[in-house]
Image: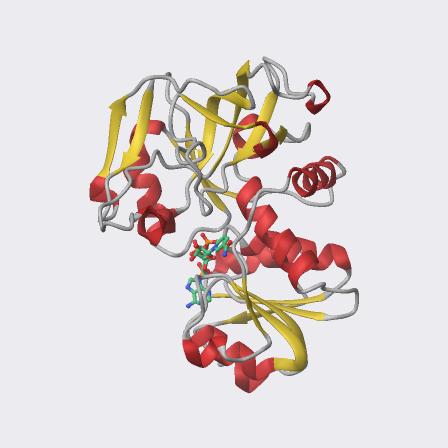
Length: 317
Ligand SMILES: NC(=O)c1ccc[n+]([C@@H]2O[C@H](COP(=O)([O-])OP(=O)(O)OC[C@H]3O[C@@H](n4cnc5c(N)ncnc54)[C@H](OP(=O)(O)O)[C@@H]3O)[C@@H](O)[C@H]2O)c1
């Protein structure tokens, strides 16, 4: 099969497509023939691939993906419903790498523990389903589990049209929160208005700390000075979800700041799939690239102006 491996350290110049063996599965694993994988441009720069001795792992990229089940391990419980031919979406949770979760979905096939995949939403194409797991789960876990956002509260989402944030916008509206989003482009403004965002601010024109007060929750995928400004707007018992790695000391010492890394949760992802099927949540796709255009796909992410998710089609094996 063809696979995209990243050979760190380095960026897109270190992406290589090579021919590899189709992975063999253990008893509790499932093999998926890949249809599409989501592109997380920051994945090229994550420190998790550096080993203790200073050398690097060379992972097959693609944290979350969609595809069709090709093989099911003998120990996979019957009541999981996972069977050959089922269309699924999966999330590796490579941020917590284990021996068996290290390779992702930018390949002809990928294997995962059975608990890392759920049937795709019926309402979505198999391509669009690849955009859901990591981003939607991040917003779900941030708002529902960590911040416990409630109806009537105010949610601030910097970079609200981005691939992860657009889910926070939708979950915030679904919960009955007042949602304030920032963006800089006409395309982003239109997208946010289409999701009913209550107030849209141009982050190039305003300083958050000067124009906002009484925010209850900040869902922050921008961080740095944006977090510093957002903290000025936050209620004293509010929560700032700091998504871009561990916060620097001056931000991290504030007890209102919460850093977490998304994890796979099949129950939550199934709930998200149900809400998509009910028309209450929907993915936003920025662009879909062919497998051999993987470098362009990551470069699109590196612009920092994607509106929704960037996807990479699976190879013709
Ligand atoms: N901790 C976790 O578990 C977790 C999970 C998911 C993601 N993340 C992290 O979240 C970060 C964001 O990733 P992403 O891929 O979702 O988004 P992204 O592609 O980095 O963000 C794109 C969006 O950001 C907006 N933007 C760009 N510069 C901005 C600025 N200075 N202020 C406000 N908005 C700005 C753009 O809006 P305009 O085009 O309108 O300017 C665009 O909509 C990454 O570092 C990723 O690793 C962490």
